[in-house]
Amino acid sequence: MNLDDDLLQAFVDGAVGPAERAAVEAALQADPEAARRVLRLVEQKRLIKERFDPVMQEPIPERLRLRRPAWIGYARAAAVLAAGIAIGLAAPSPWRFGAPATPVATAPAPVAAGLPTRAARAHVVYAAEVRHPVEVEAAQQDHLVAWLSKRLGTALKVPVLSPEGFELLGGRLLPGPEGPVAQFMYQEGTGKRLTLYVSARSKQEGPTAFRFAQEGPVSVFYWIDGNWGYALSGDIDKAALSRVSTSVYRQLNP
Amino acid sequence: MPVDSDAIVAYIPNLRRYARALAGERHAADDLVQDTLERAMRKFHLWRPGDLRAWLFSIMHNVFINQLRSKRNQPTDELGEYAGAGTPDWVTDAHDLERGLAGLPPEQREVVLMVSLEDMSYEEVSRALGIPIGTVMSRLSRGREKLRRHMDGEGTRPNLKAVP
Image: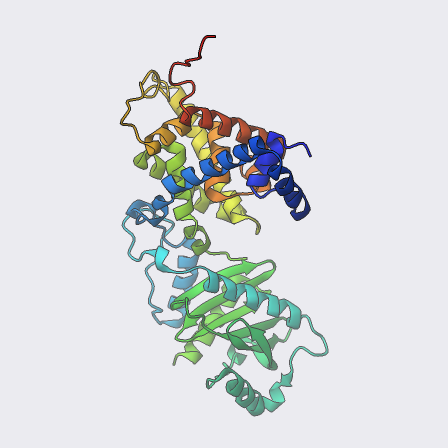
């Protein structure tokens, strides 16, 4: 085996496959000069990391803290105005730097980010179902609510969205990272469907007011309230979805 | 995929670490991070789900290159403060490392740091910098060799060879 510099470098950087790695390791046993070169590369990498890793622990200077982008602010403002309720976040502002009202860096990403994605995926899968969009139909609403409440371990309320033009079709139970998830499906006269996804909040996730996410064709409004995350998904425009979301929020938080 | 600022916020410590090593000085490094974040916010709607880290580092690369260009138009050499500076014997390894990095051509420094600090794959570096993987590997190996020679004192001290 020819232990040239390119190969040794790739070996050190983990850019060789398992078989080649084993072959290089074997060849290095018989080539002390090549082994020394490998050690030098490893040592250099270690030195660089050791020198600059502490920067990661430094507090983030004020000027590098981010504020929410404008569209979240506007969406939230619209929701707040429409409902006449304050959801507890700052006035809309474009991304700004310096002197933030609330340091965003304290909000962990993974779960808030996961909720709309999971909700949108579930929406895409089941809203497209012609024959079996739900497990339990709205005709058996009492049973549906009792069943899902029992599985999620909380008293679920099903918002009434008839004033917004959406009738309950029914619901289903889904698996989620924090346990069972409930999905309620609504349908408009034209056949457009919305789904409300209700999932236990992950422990790392703090309360989150209205946020909007676009997941491919699916628009999602979501929020985390107490121990629960809610996401309303639909292939409808943002303004219309925002209106319905406000109604959902209001009914769940009377 | 998250459409959320939190995803970017999570990379700020990484961007700062890399920028510090790239730019050398804290204030200049945070300028680089700030410009990168501002640009990322403006362009976030253009980001397609994929490798957010490579995307952010590619933005930082562009900001860095632009800064170098504008510096080049100023009368003083970017590396002027290093040129001709001696190596006092109290200089620690850390200083030596920083001087060594500063002495690398910027395009080699970037690749060495992305791989060493971020453990980026060659492919990720190639995406972040918009260069072929072969170029990533050659810059990496030249940069590492140059840095090694600096750290070993070759080229900065008189090359004393025993005369037979």
